[in-house]
Length: 174
Image 1 (spheres, rainbow, N blue to C red):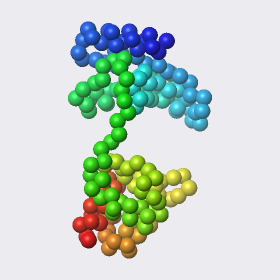
Image 2 (image 1 turned 90 degrees about the horizontal axis):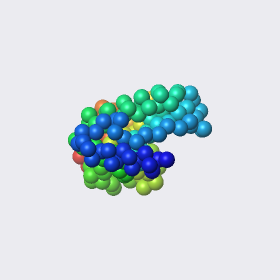
Image 3 (image 1 turned 180 degrees about the vertical axis):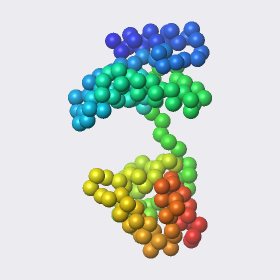
């Protein structure tokens, strides 16, 4: 059924150049693993990996998907043609790659982690350290304290900025 719906939407897309949400093939489903009502249903644009939304009902999931689509359309110059596969795009790593040796050292000495066991892009921030078992403010204070102790660099004002800005500051201090 998805294949037929996708094919129809793709064929129809050749009759216009400005596509809207209704031009895309969508589907909804009940989420059997939902732990919360707000994610009881899912909605997606078929073949568009990252265009997914959730809601308490199918209608709310579709409304959330429509909102996500609108936001995407407002922030991107081009839309993928309806009915085509939209590959998953990874964020840029141009800036963070410049500081790989510093990142490796920082992860090992400050975070007690292996930098190469994760994917970190130019937009990655220390938010990934948060979990339900740890007080995030205490974790923040500890990371700042370790950075001052090990590198003589205060990152208090850029703690919530992308990681590469922290590494840049550490490198500038060397």
